[in-house]
Image 1 (cartoon, each protein chain N blue to C red):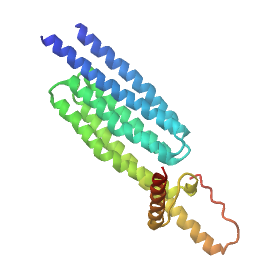
Image 2: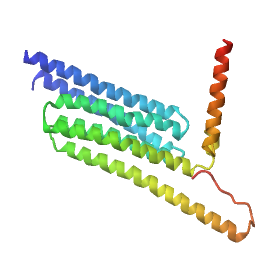
Image 3: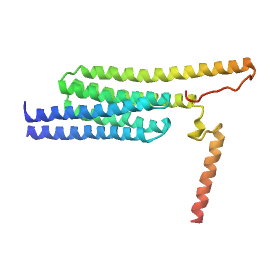
Length: 132
Length: 118
């Protein structure tokens, strides 16, 4: 009976650990596939939160009910808080220092222009729906 | 050593090897990245993978204190990314101010050749 429980624990933990590794692989694929930093950041942020939390939850199941498990959970919680902050700072660095940003994305000098454009696009969409 | 123990050890070694290969790919991104933000992002990714490696190692060697090192590694990695971003923003602002100052002093003597490859 105890042995069956041990095997279930092994399979559950290994499945979580392997899915974490797969998410790391997807992250690497995205980082090499995208062609600008602000696009690559999407892929990189996924591994920081989802990948590490899957793999560390798998390792928590392996380690059992310990004080070590609590410390591993602390790492996951710390990364959940710290990863968005560092991503935001990196994006700010890129936007502030790139002088040819308009080659990669549209820039709105005023927020009112963006609102006008959104309004115009949604109006066109409604018109298209009426025609259909 | 029982059969289950053997399975655990082999799995830990396989996970460590896979993570090492992915770490090398991150290093390629850090070397190839055309901009500074690319390199900092790659270093951040490497930090995340090293954290998983340290935790796997601590379970493999059955040493609980390695998890503390992993927590400290997470904090240092966060600090490194933030400080590097702030320093690069400051350096860029300083260069920009100097450029404006020189342009005003020389009274548009020549064309400024500003390379966008910061």
